[in-house]
Image (cartoon, rainbow, N blue to C red; front, side, top):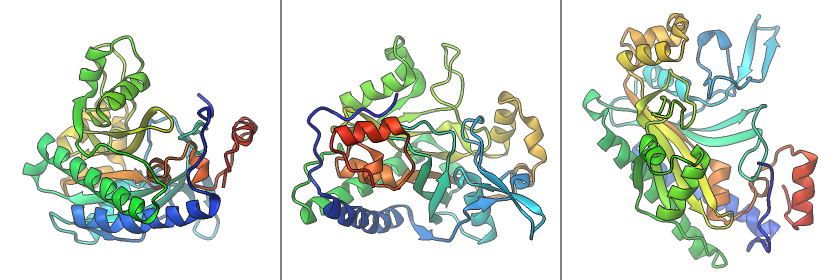
Length: 334
């Protein structure tokens, strides 16, 4: 779609205040998230050995940034996310049900399109929590989503107290809807247009069941087959008044168990992944049952601070068209 700066947009925060606000946002939000979901911060990798099957394949078409490591005699790939690594870490670190981990994840997504919301640099709080089998339900997923939204809104309240110029408003109550229900209601719209329509109407929306094929024969969005259970996952969207569109703040879900992993690998046409070390552990029932996701750090800052472009809250590389559009609109990219 490219970068489009809304007519008349002017940030309510100057460059110095913006830097202060970014630090405050991250400082305020993480403790709230940890308290809400019972998480403990851990250290995580920037790259993994691709032969382990630990990297997140996203939609299955993105190319990881890879390089050789002569001293170790192997290849390395920069993570797309830590979706699978986190689950293995919970297993190795002996986390028990009801508790989880969170980490600062930094990634490079070389094939990402560039627009107001997307950058090749990704920074997010990647979290994962051990659950019991009886908690693998939509009700537990929805409660977790609502807890995250309370943490987001609580952070906004404190930010507005310290930065009175902010006038951001967010809806605290989440509307839950399946991807099929969205298609049924707006069959003539694209998935992205449906998301915008739902978020504009409801403010905060969680779209459930992403990854499988809808009645139309299309997918709402792609999902790798080996971390989220497509029947128990979704995207958290919040309405961004400055841009007049939905912002995906988090992709999350209850993770695959033995049965759903085997089924989804078959549906995705990649049953050979079952032979990878991570997948073998899962299919043998050795890995804990978990729920997890990622919460975009720059996305959260952009949303709470009312920014029109993600480059106002993160440092990245931009194409000439993006730089021109921002320069002409008086938008300062970091």
